[in-house]
Amino acid sequence: MKKILLLVLILGCSFYGFSQSTKYGVRGGLNISNLNFDGNPMANNTHRNGFVIGFFGEYGLSNTVYIMPELQFSAEGAKPEPMQLDYIQMPVLFKFRLSEKLYFGAGPQVGLKINKVDDGIRNFAYSGVTGFEFKLSHMLFADARYTYGFSNIFDENLGIKATNSTIQFGFGYKF
Image 1 (cartoon, rainbow, N blue to C red):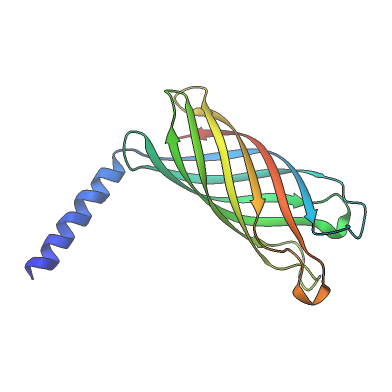
Image 2 (tube, rainbow, N blue to C red; image 1 turned 45 degrees about the vertical axis):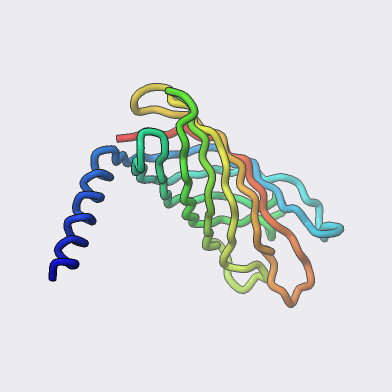
């Protein structure tokens, strides 16, 4: 009983500590995306311009380290219509404060393809994200991110291998 009470007390204090520096917000921006083929691409492989929009939570672990899970819609892939990929993504960034206005973030991302089914392209994508955030004011920020796909986007039976890479330029608002 004492161990359970101690565990509840520790968890309660830790959640109280997290709530002291918890922020929520929205973020949107521009994507410049391309597919990186292993070998020669099957079609004209030109980049696709799209957009990203979503919301996030930012939880302070200390004065300089934060964890920031997001849920976002992202238009990615390549310009030819069969290779245009739209995802619901969940990046989880670990952010580090470099100065009063500059932050660096990195972390994993998982994506669920939402625009087509049974088209030879996998429904799940796994990526890594890294980027910088610049604080414009107490509530506004601008950021730049690079996302590199770790998983092949095509089904194995097609014999084609490609990964997605995306550069994002965004703006956000923290409540």
